[in-house]
Image (cartoon, rainbow, N blue to C red; front, side):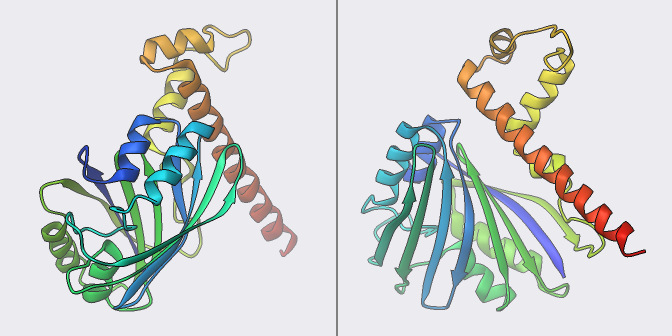
Length: 248
């Protein structure tokens, strides 16, 4: 098995959800599940952010012009169902389903056509960047799929290949730093370099935010998300090590 990771970059006005995420840099969306057949697509997404960001995202999901992952820029005539499964002050979980028409296409549909069945999809979105990870068979024609996807996204969406690697069953497939979005890695690296984590601190959060030219709230959110991710990865790795040692 291999993992193929690539990213789409939406131009302004081409995707309602991307426009909202660009307006609220603290917000992000990750997939909880994504499924495709030749005739339909359905998925569940988990969004995090401020109350205003989540309200705007909910409106974007319910926009009559939006179909999750559909690459057709004009009205494709599909029937779309959107349902909010959970909503709190900082979390939004949304279910989306649509039936495919003759002109509809999407990343999962292009993958199904060129890579076959049995694919696993994982996605992460922030601002205008939409990162896809597909787990697939080792002999799948990746370049054929990527070329076909490039033809479908057209000029309104940039596309970048990030990595293609074999899955290693003896270790986690994503290193902790790689698992962090670029903005969180940048914030974390700057915090370390400028002494934010030293005792006593050489720089306060507000000063660091000014150096990075981002709002203080944005920097605070990115650091908290990065710290949470790294802490979780550390505990999981430590638990795995203890289990391994106990079995010796």
